[in-house]
Length: 365
Image 1 (spheres, one colour):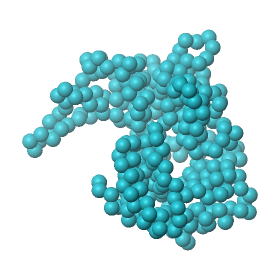
Image 2 (image 1 turned 120 degrees about the vertical axis):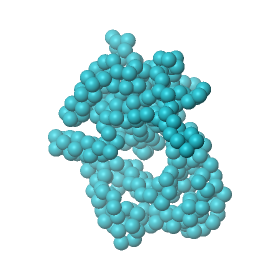
Image 3 (image 1 turned 60 degrees about the vertical axis):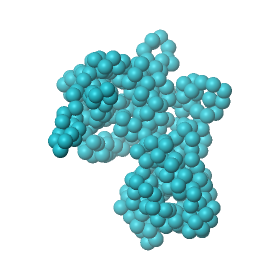
Image 4 (image 1 turned 30 degrees about the vertical axis):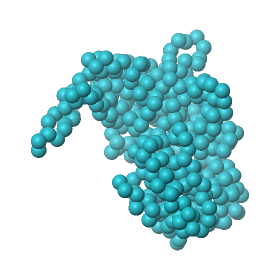
């Protein structure tokens, strides 16, 4: 596919170039850029380390080692070539080598990557917040490792191998970064080509269904699924926010508020729950904070409409901000207490929706 610009009422093709011609290197440039902003990889990832090599008897290095919100490690392998070389074989090797990493080791890895005084405590806080966990004892990383391959293009050998691996239960994604030259500017078209975005959800569901038939659900997953099943059913009589949602094993359930970049979430930890409005506009921290500040200027009126105080968290260093209220009780609460907890959460998220919908719609695009 070509990239075009609109010029004098006509489409003008933007010339394609190569990373080699533009002297863009894998480690110095592409790797550094993706470490600072992993959004071209297609989802919310927390980078644990760059050039990870913390293992014995091997000098091999993972370009980027990341974590996703399902507590899975993600190996990111980057090539600037137009065929990808043998990157899928490298990535498989790395995935096997990191598969036994624990949560504690993941936190230590991020701390070393950050460096400086207090990095251990900061790394632990960031990892737990990213996962939505309250403590390092709450759960452990899964033994599943995802792979993301990044290149200017991929050979038939690689794409065939990836499709075959995905059919057999692995989770491998191919992201193409194609460079274009527009005057003195270098543009990069980032596109996920495997799995195709339109089929990604279907492929994930098929893969997850196959896995679920091969293993017993963990206590936490089963508990969360049962909790959200009852929550969704209870909410239908009081708010339409979650009426079209399906039960999940995630620790959160999301609903829209009628504007991109603003989501209503209900989330659970072991002993605490939260109803929130999460503000993340195109994963742009500056735009997200600007919208947050505009709402904060109306704090008095919003809290009056809500019926009580709210927590206003700008979350420095994150790509989003949140406005929330916390509720005592989490997924480890006795099942007999669930109806009361769910009723509180439905009430809080409904009031939060009513208090914020107007002010959010009033923010200029």
